[in-house]
Image (cartoon, rainbow, N blue to C red):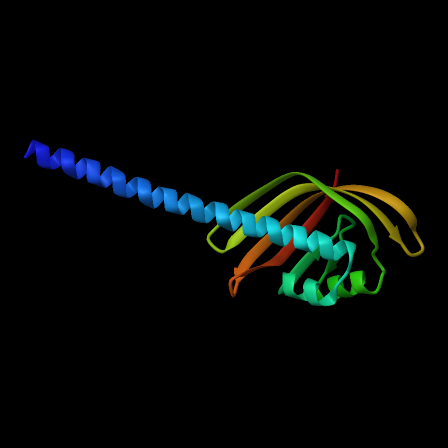
Length: 149
């Protein structure tokens, strides 16, 4: 009986290790996919492309600026495509990604050079929180909030 208990314990340990390893690999893969979507978003902000921006943004997007302005998906895309908001350079630091099921939160510090019409060149440094949701096997931006540092 004692040998049976030891064998059962060993088998349970092996199974749990395999399950936890698989879960860890899936979480790492999801984190990498969210990081890729975040990079694609930044690239599309630097070189605005309506098709890419529309694919990355959820139809329910809430895009919050550090000024308090909130944009819908349509407003966010139009602001970039029209040239009302111009990013010449964007760098992110201190990025973290946390994934739970089909939702991810990305936080980073954004340092950018902008050149918006009527405002001229400027340097900005903002804290950013992005909320991504997985929909139809792709990650879409559901929410973004910037805050002044």
